[in-house]
Amino acid sequence: MDIRQLRYFLAVAEEGQVTSAAKRLNMEQPPLSRQMKLLESELGVTLFDRSGKRLALTHAGQLLRQRAEQLLCQFQETIEEVQELDEGIHGTLSIGSVVSCVSLLPQRIERFHELYPRVTFKINEGDHFLLGDQLEKRNLELIVARLPFEAASDPDRYTVIHLPPDPIVALIPSSWPQASEDRRLEMGAMAQYPFLSLKSDLTTGMHDRVLKSFRESGHEPHILCECSSVAIILALVTAGIGATILPKSVLASFPLTSIVLYELSNTELYSEVGLIWIKDRYLSKSARNFIKTFEI
Image (cartoon, rainbow, N blue to C red):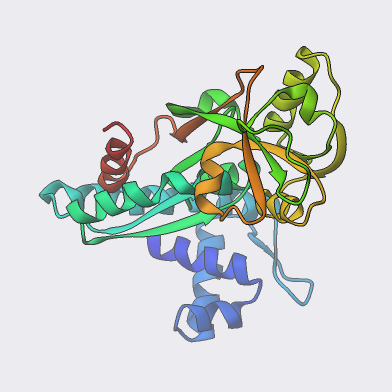
């Protein structure tokens, strides 16, 4: 069994058909079928259930697929690590970010690109669970997210660099009567408005923190809507549907159209932000150098 056979096997496992896998691999179907038979013979197991229209993996096939994906990732990482020894930094750096942290990236990407113009970027946006899954699958090397990072994996799996905390502010539709001239607002005043809360079924950190601050001030908000999208919440505030409380840096990525910003005066609400990757996993030189842009 060699790397080439593992690549062939993964293509067939992913496609569910030898014909489409052969097309994807730019080879003829009979040689690919022979390679799969040879692999099964060498291992002494049946990897595919061939009784249906599509090939299904047996239990042995499922285990081999899992191990093959890991081995091929390690193989590729080894190649990259060896190539980087000559300081010829190039390739693609894959980064994930929650939408509320996107504003932290442009300045650092610009600085990094000036130093390493041969490196390109791939940036994915998603919630904590999606980004955590992509990190586990090695589709991403680094993530910028609000803390705590609420992914499915054990928190001890991650290395986290804490970035400067982000103050949280109140956002009120400009069409509403304005609460104060000095643009400062107490939690009690916020509790009088229909409230739009940032919360998904899986990520509740911001919602819980804001709700706790309301209750510590002796008030309970009237939650009109729980929403997982910052963009949708801001659209609802713009439309005059409700008010919200969000990290201030979010606003760098969205124009404040028909929205008035207020500082919160009787609470110290901050959002913790972190740069995250998986412990004890190889990071490309590009990733290690990009991390340094957050330390300057």
